Image (cartoon, rainbow, N blue to C red; front, top):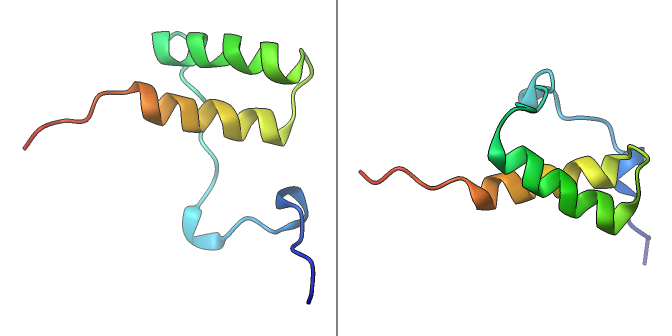
Length: 65
């Protein structure tokens, strides 16, 4: 059985387009960044950015239709 490639070894899918930067003034970003710093340390990494983006998605309330 073949092992999976690590996430940083895979190419970014073209359908996603260019990555967008985080809104660093938002409350969601600040709280998730604080948690990520505790968990991963102060250095910037791909895993840390993935953690932050997922935390922001969980933090933001969904719009009701």
